[in-house]
Amino acid sequence: MSTATLKPRIGEPDIECRYPVIIGEDRVIGQAYRWHRDWLVITSEGEHNLRRPPAADAKRASGIDMAAAYLAEEYAAGRITATGLEQLRAEAPEPLTGPVPLLHPRMPVNDRNVGGATTAFAGLTEHHWRAVLHGFPGSDNPWYLHCELCGWSGVRYWSHHRGRNNQPPSPYRHDGGCIGKDKVRALIPAYSK
Ligand SMILES: [Zn+2]
Image (cartoon, rainbow, N blue to C red):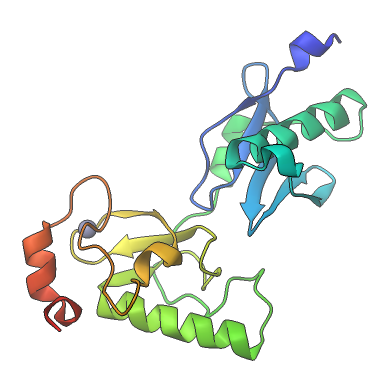
């Protein structure tokens, strides 16, 4: 197989922000995702941490490119196998209806993380958000949330929700329209303090 046929492309991420790396029409050779500053891949052989891209081009996009190049190389060498995109989508994580644990499974249980998670969940409640996939993943990792004001769900980051300098977060809650900034301000006491 020539390297040209192995040129991978990046597909649409799932609700945990894991990007399928695809070869050809629909063969997925792995999934790539960022956790804090590291990039990890999930393949037929399990999970592998690629760490950070070289400092010179330490951008989000190049992290994905680094992961895609790694996967293409592993696949070309016969060390991993591909799966179908349809199958991957069928097995993709789904939002939960019940409560989620306090911490994301990748977050170690310690005082700092439990404290951060407790603060975050209190903030979600105050601002009418609900975690519907997993517990607190840290401030800068994707967190799939449900907006209880309008029913929207999507990936958010706690660093955008916690507000700054004792100010509440922006009343612009998410893309795709919500109930409008005025109604948000009227409904949530934090905006009238
Ligand atoms: Zn909303």
